[in-house]
Amino acid sequence: MERVEVTSVTHSQGVRMLFSLMTPNESSFATVREVPTYVNQATPYFIGLILLEIVLGWLKTDGPHIKINDFITSLSAGMMSRLPQLVIRSLELSAYIYVWNNFRVLELPWDSAWTWWLAFLGVDMGYYWFHRFAHELNFLWAAHQVHHSSEYYNLSTALRQSVTQQFSSWVFYLPLALMVPPSVFAVHIQFNLLYQFWIHTELVKNLGPLEWILNTPSHHRVHHGRNPYCIDKNYAGILIIWDRMFGTFTPESDKVVYGLTHPISTFEIWTVEFLYYPYLWQMFWEAEGISNKLSIIFKGPGWTPGKPRLGDIADIPQLTGEEKPHDPAWSPALQAYVLIQFLLLIDVYNNLLMDQMILSELSALLLTAYVLLSLTSLGFLIDQRANAPELEMLRCVLIVALQRFGYIKPLVPLLAFLIEVFVLISGVYWSLQFVNQRTNGMKKQN
Ligand SMILES: [Zn+2]
Ligand SMILES: [Zn+2]
Image 1 (tube, rainbow, N blue to C red):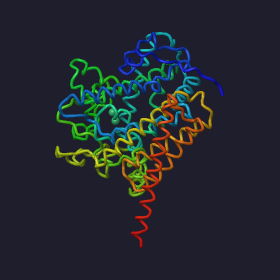
Image 2 (image 1 turned 90 degrees about the horizontal axis):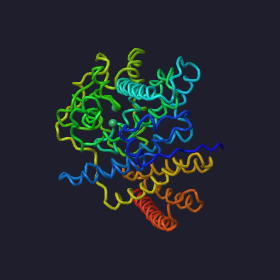
Image 3 (image 1 turned 60 degrees about the vertical axis):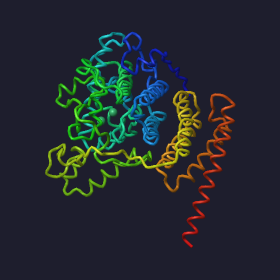
Image 4 (image 1 turned 135 degrees about the vertical axis):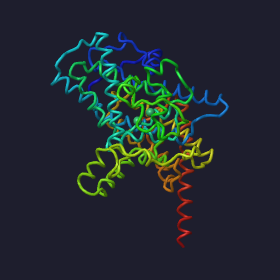
């Protein structure tokens, strides 16, 4: 396999890239191969800011604005959404390179600050239109609704990303490929995504004059709201000017109630990621006549026959102000267990992303399967499903096997030993739970 060197970002760049504070000088490259994997390298900075938000939230009298079940579900979605890139190169980049190679009309210099700024604006406007279509076309909403499914609003919400969104967003950046080199695009498509992390917080209230130009926590809170005044507003990525120009801007006013108008009330990751597709399929077959069927696909998610293209705001469920997020009780011990297992998983996932170029195909495949199984099993545990113990028992066996055969390598050998003991005890506990369930089930049948 061909070896590709990964360019590492410095700590200063790691922090600045999250706020779109990188300069053209330090982020212009001649070829796509030289472009750092900024997003993959952002994990420690995401974790640092999330911890900071938790601490600051705690220092405020009303306690932390974060729940372990919602937090892990958001991070799980983020992890799942990046797994396809282990197998296929990002579609956004592949399609872009294809258009550049075959149809470019101009070849702007990759090392000019003008090209860099043009790409900054072009990618941000492309994102605005992609995002707007993702809300206004039901079949694109099927992917994007994942990002809106949390009923909380904190930094972890930013990571709640859709697996399938990447299969449609690439179209919106192709006009740029007629003149801006792929290496410049490859930088900005990552910076645009990274900027959108820090705006997912309730801790930053108002940024004064910056609110005129930038997309800020306040503007994006509105975008995540299900209050009538928030619906289909503030689609911006980095610059809010696009919403002001194209008539979709609205400032924050009433207290925002977050999430989908019809909350999904689950933490099980496959449901979170894919539940809208069977729903869309069902709506499509139930609609009468070809015109209604096409409308189900191509009009807004709120559309019903006889209504305007984007539906009627009066049709969405009324808010009482008493809305409580879905948060079923679960024991502190189970919460601690799921959290520890999730942190161990993040370490494996991070190594998988960082080492993807040097891992053998078998290793990459095994670790991807392990990550998927873990996300599924931990989701089952959070949702407290009946078949959670048997899946978790299997997962514990797999962890020990992967560690024994050297596919999982913890930071220090002592940690490897401790993890093995912890996982073995956990495995025994889950098998006892499983046997217990079975015997109880048989007793009931008799
Ligand atoms: Zn959105
Ligand atoms: Zn968001």
